[in-house]
Length: 91
Image (cartoon, rainbow, N blue to C red; front, side, top):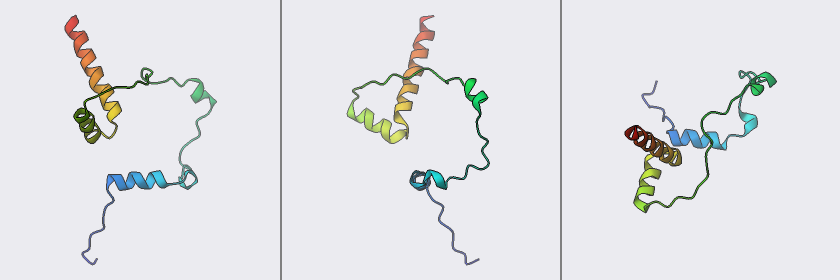
């Protein structure tokens, strides 16, 4: 061994590589097909989402975007926790 270290791709580089990959290049040979029985019994998970427009302070929006890769999911989680806390306080 020459003592040189291999560069480990960053998370962003790995995600970008996946985004650039073509569907036909993905090996799915070890994934079983999901038959009609599976889909007949499939149940949606979680409540339905409502698409909305929301106005936020710019600094709050920038903080959310920089802090959470899926910032819209984070907003939902923060609001859900606040809602549940308020409901507990009301009882």
